[in-house]
Amino acid sequence: MRILCCVKRVPAPGAKINVTADGQSVETAHLGFTTSPHEECAVEEAVQITEAQGGEVTVLTVGPSEAEEQLRYAASVGCHSIVLVPTDGTALDPQRTATIITETVQALEAEDGAFDLILFGNESADSGGFQVGVRVAHALGRPIVNGIKGIDVEADQIVARREVDAGFEVYHLPRPAICGVKEGINLPRYPTMKGRLASKKVDLVARDGDADAGGQSMIRLHRPQETAKETMILGDSEEAAGAIVDLLEEIGVMS
Amino acid sequence: MTLLVLLDHDGNPDGAAMPEASREALTAGRQLADDMGADMVAVVIGGDDIDDLAEEAGKFGAESIRHVTHDLLADYGPDAWAESLRQLADDTDADAVMAVGNDRGNEVMAFLAARLDQPFVANCTAVTDADDDEWSMTRIQWGGSLLEDATLSADVKLISFGHHSVAAAPADDAGEADVEGFEVELDESHTITMIKDRTVQTQGVTLSTAPVVVSGGRGVGSADGFAPLEELAELLGGRVGCSRAVTNNGWRPHSDQVGQTGTRIAPEIYIATGISGAIQHWVGAMASKRILAINTDPEANMVTKADYAVIADLHKVVPAVSEEIRRRRQG
Ligand SMILES: Cc1cc2nc3c(=O)[nH]c(=O)nc-3n(C[C@H](O)[C@H](O)[C@H](O)COP(=O)(O)OP(=O)(O)OC[C@H]3O[C@@H](n4cnc5c(N)ncnc54)[C@H](O)[C@@H]3O)c2cc1C
Ligand SMILES: Nc1ncnc2c1ncn2[C@@H]1O[C@H](COP(=O)(O)O)[C@@H](O)[C@H]1O
Image (cartoon, rainbow over all chains, first blue to last red; front, side, top):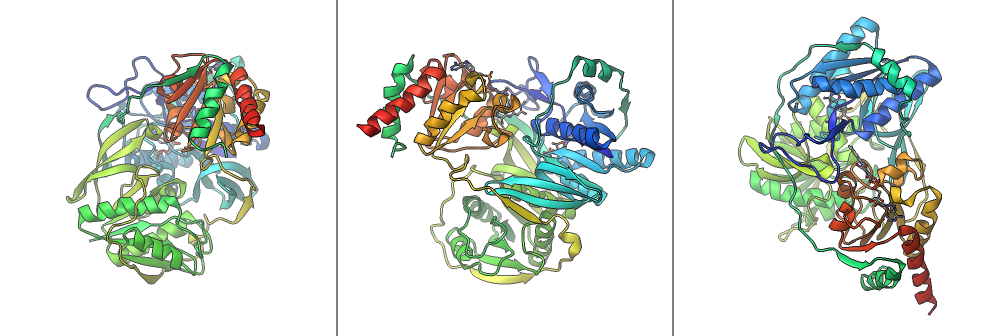
């Protein structure tokens, strides 16, 4: 099994997100960085599949050189090789990102053979374009389904499950296939000390790649308007139960 | 000028009521068609009897309805749906295609965009300029914590409207919309990604539709600590929710998680206990009509943003509330 996971480095904001004065990016001076929880789960899923069936997991990101941190993290939880396509760090539109990833996949496959499975996150945590995986799959001529919360790898197909309100939808994708993974498919492990040390020894492969800008352009980011409201304090102990139930009665959810 | 609006339905539209998501799409589409100077054409893919859907689409301002049919459209599949839309867009010489920004809508639009090699702007909250070649719009980033002003230049404009970012409202001057069939050409290559099977979970009220959500965060402390929250939720006919700290600890399944990478909820009241209110949690809860935070920290974001708060130990307050409800119901 050869599996590829695509991840994107994003800031990890806490109570609120601030935007830089020029409106071009998130103010990251005091923030750590991470990937989308969906992508963390994609990495965990890939590692679990290769642990059960043998094989190797490659992780790919298109981003600033600092994105090495996210690649090394993936290596520390069990991925075998890490690939960075460096950018100057400005946000790329989804078409451009997809073309860069497609061409990188084609180059990697020409050297070491096709990936049996490629995993994306359901959507990136920051720009949330809901499309990079689908565009790459189309360009590679492979099937993809998004929103996947269950994957069984069978000899000639991938059985993928998508959770909906009423249960699960089941898809059968012939291999090689692509899935957009949703958080909840598994519980990602934390890196062990041994994993952290091993990840330092994994070679970082840097590959050149770029593409023309697509038709969607970002002008500026801003925070949605918030209506400031007073919080009404109902109490400071379990004595507040009476006031809470009064409230529940008043809004009609007690019947 | 023509604007196609894709209606969502659950694979089988026969006799189905129109989902709220589709009403939103038509409401946003009506405004957009107006700005474009276009006719709004609603699109239903698959099924036989779409009379109810069509009547509803008319009420929400669709000028006409195209009903896409083919033997292979027995269920939902993003390839088959996107190819159907592609052929219909071609046939109607559509200037723009839009869907609602839910899982399915965004997926179909991404497939359509890939097939047409056009940009696709997901989860718009408003299109501010649609009468030029280049459109201007505002869209959701970070699951709603941030907004992005963007422009779109494309031969065919492809967008989705963020779910819940417009309130569905029928058109004032609604007429009756004619239904016209559209037989697409599909083959087996389009059904590779079609649903092959379903497993059905029987559950009552779901997290996204529950009138009351009683949610717990890291402050609950353990999986067992959720028993009193379960009890309170049950007394109120609601559901238990949780934060990502909780799912990460394996205390609750991910289907209970509220937030950016979990479920967006909009209950009558959200009772958030032991949750600090990180922005990624908040965006999943902010559509709640009222929020009651129970937290030991008066400075917690959840508390300062809530309508009501109790500054105390949730392990004492939650059982006391259940007790009080039982007392009043007996009395
Ligand atoms: C891209 C991305 C996506 C994310 N998506 C989500 C998401 O969908 N949903 C989500 O929830 N998070 C999400 N997160 C994680 C989020 O940033 C926070 O880490 C998480 O919400 C914190 O959970 P918490 O509030 O339970 O824990 P904490 O932040 O640790 O807060 C615990 C709270 O409990 C209170 N407390 C402790 N003991 C008690 C007690 N006895 N009684 C009352 N109060 C008590 C404390 O005062 C504190 O406020 C995401 C993060 C990223 C980067
Ligand atoms: N810069 C990037 N580098 C690697 N993978 C990416 C990048 N941007 C997006 N992806 C992948 O594509 C998925 C969908 O992204 P998006 O279309 O932006 O929502 C993400 O969850 C990632 O798996």
